[in-house]
Length: 67
Image 1 (cartoon, rainbow, N blue to C red):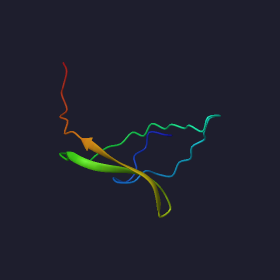
Image 2: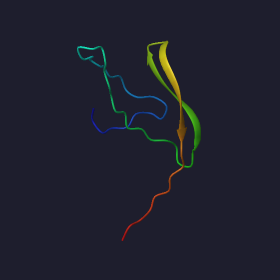
Image 3: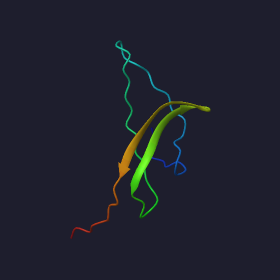
Image 4: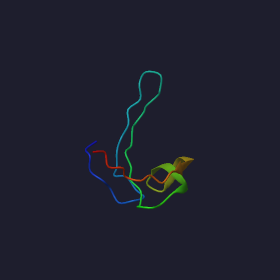
């Protein structure tokens, strides 16, 4: 996947292939609205069908300048 950002709340379409044991993995880089923190849901969907949803915690981080 290229390092381009999608609309907050959604990723662009992607596909996965499984290995011989049926497992697949994908690293998704995300960004949040500045100042937002708390509980959110991350879901795996196709069209209007949700296959998996998990609650995650978003922590508020501050940028730190290192000189």
